[in-house]
Length: 115
Length: 114
Image 1 (cartoon, rainbow over the protein chains, first blue to last red):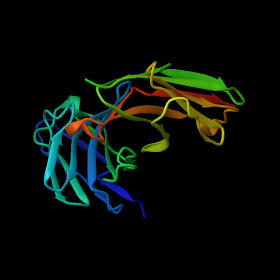
Image 2 (tube, rainbow over the protein chains, first blue to last red):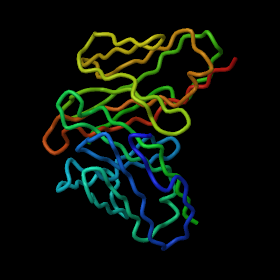
Image 3 (cartoon, one colour):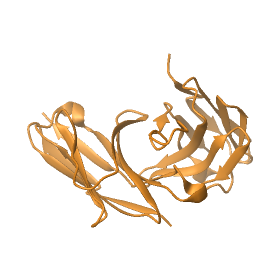
């Protein structure tokens, strides 16, 4: 079984619709992250959470919101999807320990198309 | 604002060639530099570098960090078609609320032809 799972894996939606992408992990990590990937732009951080009560904005949080329902679950919402949110979305996790904090483990990604 | 720049953006080689991928960075409070390989979907971890001049090696891949000149290189010797992927460089910030956050470069797309 995969340690970090994302659902759905692919989604097509229309402009203005509300969309939720879900991430679950069995690694027991405290820290979770949401990224988007666009061609030629690498991975950009949307939101991150260092524990259940801690939520922080990343570099491109506008138009997105998140919820950390439990240590193992971190959801990303697009309240009103727009076409330039078409991208590949990744969830990642990392350990709290000082030696492993930076090593992030990625889910398989969700490909979102907003028409 | 932390910044990571990778070069080249894309590279096409033949099997058996040696390639060098570059990563330069600017970060307010450097903690470490990481390399990831991305094939079909999820990036997978390759190396984490924290000290200058110490080479990390895994099979045909190796990497080294220069904290004075603010760059790292990833070398792949005797390339194989299975090395075709996007290689991502990221830096981790050690400061305050940014602790542990990664800033990624654009990635280098490597294509290895038979």
